[in-house]
Length: 129
Image (cartoon, rainbow, N blue to C red; front, side, top):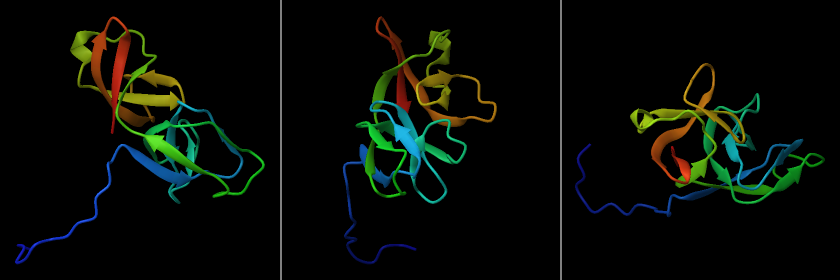
């Protein structure tokens, strides 16, 4: 539909999002995280993860808590990751996570963490989705 008047939209920065942490999980600060179908935060590689959303801002231990006892912040952006074997020809390709700090260029049944953004003397840089 074509706008017929000004549209007042809600905005937020878009580099950080908060989600309730799933019961029975521990999330380490700086680790890749995802969400379940019910929008509960879990570590990447968790069996219930349906999408990867960024990197945990802080460590949260909810192993003895209920879902929502903690709210975790997932940060998006460009960050250095451990990924061996990447070449300049891989820049722009999808990167997948098999665990919260394990990344690969091979999809298989893994969820996409982002795209390979750059390679330099520091290593491989991931741009989150």
